[in-house]
Amino acid sequence: MVARALWALLAALRAGWCLLPQSGYLHPDEFFQAPEVMAGDILNLQVYYPWEFLSSSPCRTVVFPLMTSGVTYWVIKSLQQLDICSSCINSYTLLVSPRLLFTIFSFILDYSVYQLAPFWGADPWKALILLAGSYVTLVFYTRTFTNTLEGLLFALLMLLVSSRKSSGSSAEPTSSSLIGVITTAGFFNRPTFLAFALMPLLYWAGLIVDSQKSIKTLVNHFLKFILCACFTASVFITADTFYFTSVSLDNIYSTNKSSLIDTIVQLHDKMVVTPFNFLSYNLNPHNLALHGTHPRVTHFTVNGVMLFGILHILAISAGFKMLKKYVHQLTLVRWCYRGPPGPVHSEGSPTLLLFYFVPLAFLSLFSHQEPRFLIPLILPLVLFSASPNRAVEWKLLIVLFNLLGALLFGCLHQGGLIPSLFHLEQLIHSPASSSHPRHYTLLFAHTYMPPRSLLNIKKTDMHVEVIDMAGAGEETLCQTVEQRANNFTCSDCHVFIIIPGTVTATITKCGVSFKNETLIFPHLSMEDPPQIPVLSSGNWRSQLGLYILELNRDHQSL
Image (cartoon, rainbow, N blue to C red; front, side, top):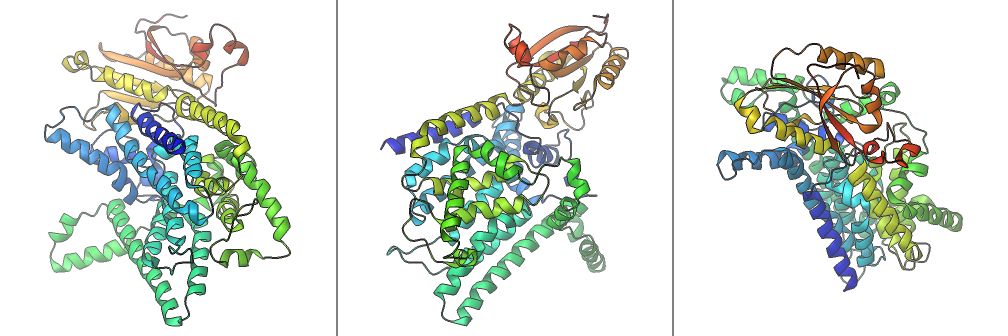
């Protein structure tokens, strides 16, 4: 009962924190791989389209953005059009509605863990608490990342390949079609899904070979898999081709037979297969270098610890012990093809560990390694960690680690940027601004890329200009600020500079003054971290804040 109550409390925390909402900003991809694009397409808002969604370089499928952020935006748009909610479209709903859908989807993980735990010899409620209490679940799985969808599809795949009869014996595989659909969908979502799918697919293939005595039945399973995979791929390719080539169905149906054939031929010539474009781009070392390169051991030594803490370290330790013990008894191939695990010993299940380490090893082959790439691995890790007598003595460390992770990534990390966009959206849409049109220039410096959609500006409105200076140097920043200060083109022009407190000293050297100053707290920029001596002084709040500075028209040197 205690375990169930604790899981329910953590589940409520997950949903409630999503609605608050979480202020931490993990990575630009949480906005620019779905919500920002859909806000522009469905709500006709001013947005920034990332290069992956341009017709000249289509590297991301549009299917999942349409099914997630697209659906939520269509719902709030419909509610507003039907006058059920007069102001449904605002910065809060634009942020929270896609996140809420992902939060609901995240409970697929909980269901999967509960169903899989007995199969892998783990305690179901212990595994559920490890999952629900992890900051990875609380923070990453409530955000609109393609990695989040990758983790959910990985969970479904593990659920499909791990089946057992009520008697405890291995069940005859009956889900070949669904496995084909999920594998292909995961590949189109992120081609790296194949790294996660490899072990489940090998395990599933081993079960089929062991349980089937008829070659005809065996071929039938694999044929179902291939046919459903091909059908799913055709759906994704068709949808992406229509989206990126801008050929509408209305145009096709309105054409005559001859023109229709020409249009179909044109579509065939312009066929868009986004995973191949993704792989072509990412297999080029020069392209990866543009996004940052890391040592090949970063996932093993840094990212795994950053995400999972002591659980990752215990898994590595157990892996080495198992390898040493079984190296002369079993080969890795036999591990992959063995049936459902027998009783779980203190070292844990070697097959389950392979579900964790094989994807980790494949992802380590690439030089660009970010922590979020590993979040799907939380499922096999908590199942392994919830085996008898494992991780019990580390309870306090696990709790403290996840509290720190939730605070750092859910609240502090770039935590002032989203609230600042909320503040600016209210300012831009205030009654005073509506009655007397004003022009706003919003200059962001030394922050993550601001999602323009949260400002809720229609594409037809030209009174707001957003300038992203990224990590511009002092000279470039001052030059831009001074230029804006000296070139007010109207009586109702307003220039705001959004900048971390750790960089405000740079602005004071630019020879401009400000008439309004708003501090958004907290905000931690790891690119411009606060200095420890300053934090220990009385000025610590400004160092952990984000400033919205309004430029004074009649500026004088500070």
